[in-house]
Length: 207
Image (cartoon, rainbow, N blue to C red):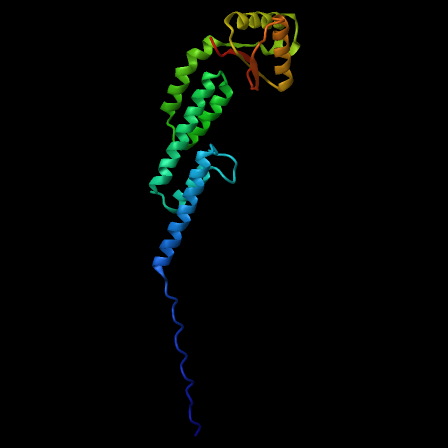
């Protein structure tokens, strides 16, 4: 009769001990790093660009880990407020296209439609008073009619001693507009900047 030999039982594998305190500290450290990166980017006006290092992305990463994090929510409000401030500055200088880009940034984060509409309305009258839109067809032809209109605008700028913002569809068109205006007031230093935008126009900044 053959004896049945029972193999010794293997001890059950021990479950690893989870160090909860260490995990919490690692999470807090990670959040501190993200918040430091976000604050540094915010201070440097890297609001949503560049893609790899901007305040919005860093704060968003914090909220993905801790959705109630007060510092991250504060940071998002600061980014929104800065975009609105930049939009106001651009509107004041007659740079409407840039102002609209800033408003889009603010709206993407936390600005309400009411805030955006109120800001646009505040500067609507100023834009209508200070801006002259240029006819696209005439500008493309560069004929006598548009040259005469530019001469009149140059004389207006001279009389009011106003700086100008020339918005053109491309840089070459902007330089042509400026050259026509400068020729019309020969001997007078016509001060102005050129900006590329979809709607050609002349903005009188100091009226």
